[in-house]
Structure formats: structure tokens, C-alpha cells
Amino acid sequence: MNKFSLNLPSSIDFGWGSTNNMPSHIKKFGKNALFFTGEKSLDESGIAANITDFLKEEGISFDAVQTEGEPSVAGIDSLVARLRNEFDLTKYDVIAAIGGGSVIDTAKAVSAMIYESGSIEDYANGTKSLSGKSMPLMAIPSTAGTGSEATYSAIIINRSDGMARKHALKHTCLMPKIAIVDPSLLITLPVEKMISCSLECMWQILEAYTSKEANIFTDSVLIEALGVLVNNIGDAYAQAVPSDVLESLSYAALLSGIGAANSSVEVTDSIAHAIGAQYGIAHSAICSSLLYAHTLINMRKAQMLEPNSTKTAKYAMAGAVFSNMEYDQSKHDVLLRAVSQQLLNIRESFMIPTLSDLGIGKDDFYKIATLTGNAVGSAYLAETDILEILELSY
Image 1 (tube, rainbow, N blue to C red):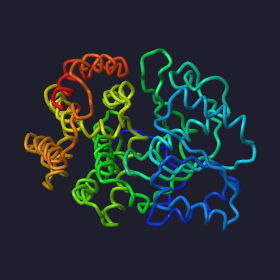
Image 2: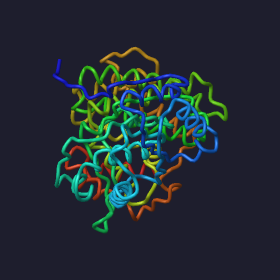
Image 3: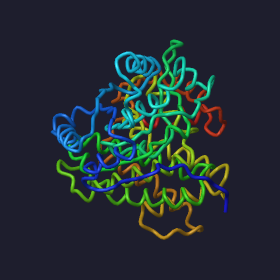
């Protein structure tokens, strides 16, 4: 059994309507909160108004900041400067982020950068290290994707050198103190977004589960997350998703975040970040498009180079989950085919957009492969492998 250490939110409040507990969680730190939001659907649905009403009733004082798009070096630097100039940051006891992964990542970065000097670029690219100081953060996801509410990293786009790149800002001080996971917030999520987030979650589960950084804890968490997701994703493709399915998708996303935070997805996840940084496409849409080919090539390479490895066995165990079969070491070939076949079925039945549909041209493939290789710093996926993934996803 390998050694491991865990990084988790201090408190996780999961369940339908758990946002109603927000005032009591805020009061653990004080009565003054700085809110980060970004989902227009929350305003349109009336959810945001309901939240602000009961915060006022509970005597919580708060100010709100609306974020736009994925966090970038320029955006974070500008936002931190604005907060310092226009807000009295000393009066806030906690930051509360309610929205998708980009909103939560923005709040993570700001929670630390208000105590640092200079640009976040230096911290994102590793030139400087975060001091570890941060304002307590409460994360309330309104999507069910990579479980950012349970991780200590924030993805930051850097366009300062004329070449867009995505960096992972990582420090345990970025871990939310409290994660409130309320599946009811998914009600207003469009079906297409629901599916792409779920497939992004599946991508992360498979990456973290088969990583060399995985351990006995993450193995159990991630294989459970995969089973929950596989058993419920089909019911997510509906105009009115049942409440128990929304609960299951939220639960799977939370588990995937916990698993990823305590394993690793850095190596092969970089291909999606390379595309997203250059073309401004949502990470969930890219992951959905790449999921089948990306998993197929990784499984094939593991089977060829490491046929008796734990990595190959784990892909086979995932195949048992996908196919509802018993795991049997002698049936690795069958179980590995089950993974690729089920992912192909998902791609076709959900009509997942291809890279071509997303506006990525074949002429850009070598550029993407080069950027991926530079970001990875690993020989596991060769340039030819990356190009094949792109071709199969086109």
C-alpha cells in the first residue's frame, strides 16, 4: 500500500437546498462576505435573489463582484487592483464563490493574491511562490464538472508573451474551507452544458484514477465516481432532469475533484489546456470532444508499453464499470474494448461536437501538439500520439 496524504475542504455540505445553510457557514468566520458570481442563469432563475434575501434576513453583510470568462493573468491582476482601490478588504471575513469552475478559480486566485505583491503571472509560472496567506474561501458550484470546490488549484490563462498558455496555480491555501454542493443549482443548466460538464468530469476521473500519483484512497473515491456517472449520465440528456440524477452528477463531480486533488491530471490534461488557451473554447467542450480518442490512445499505449502494469489494470477495471461486468485479469482485452466502445457510444448518442465543429482547423494540429509537449514535459505521450488524438477527434 503506497503512502499518501490528503488535502480536503475543512467542511463539505452536500445536498438538495444546502445553499440555505450558507449564513451559518459564513458566521463561522464573521458576518461580512465578499461574493464572486458569474452565472447569468442564477440571476434569470431568481436563485441569486433568493440567496441575497435570506443572507440579509440572517444579518449577513456582503458585496458582490461579477466575473467574466476564464481567469487570466491580466484579468486577475486587474480585479485585485480594483478590489484594493474600491473595497475595504479588511472588513471581509470570507470570500464566497458561487458559479462554475471559472468563477471558483477566480475567487481562489484573488483570495491569495490580495496578500501578495506583483503580478499573478510570476506565481502561475513558478517564478515566485505563494506565501500561504489567503482569505477563507467558500465554494458553491453551479455546474457539475471537475469539482473545483474540492481542489487546491486554479487554472490561469497567460497571454503576456504573445502566446496563450494555461498555468495551474497550486497551493494548499487555495483549497476552499467550505464546499457547499447544492444539486438544485443545476436545474437551470442547459442540457448541452450539463453533458459537456459530465464528460469533463469523466475525463478527469479516468486521468486521476490511472495516474502514477494515485493511491488507495483516490482509487476508491474515483472508481465510485465513475460508477455513479456511468449510471446516470444517460438520464442527463433530457429537458427536465430528475432531481436524483442531478444529485448523482453533483456527487460524481465532487468525488472527481477530491480524487484529482490528491492524485494528478497534469500530464495528459495539458492537451485540452493547450487548445483552450489558444482558441478560447470552454474546457468542458474540449474534453468532451477529445474524451474518446484521448482515452483510446492512452489505453493503447499503456497496453503496448506496460501490459502488466497497474495503469493497464485500472483501465480494465474502468471497463468493468462501463460494461457492468466483473473484473477479471484474464479478460483485459475485452474490458479495455468495453471502455473505448462505451465512450464511442456516448460520443455518438449525445452527438458530441468534434474539433471541427468547435472551429479547430487541421492546420493548427502541429501547433497544439507542440504546445502540449512543452506543457507536459513528459515523454509518455509522443507528438505522434497527440496528433492521432486530434485526428480521431476531428
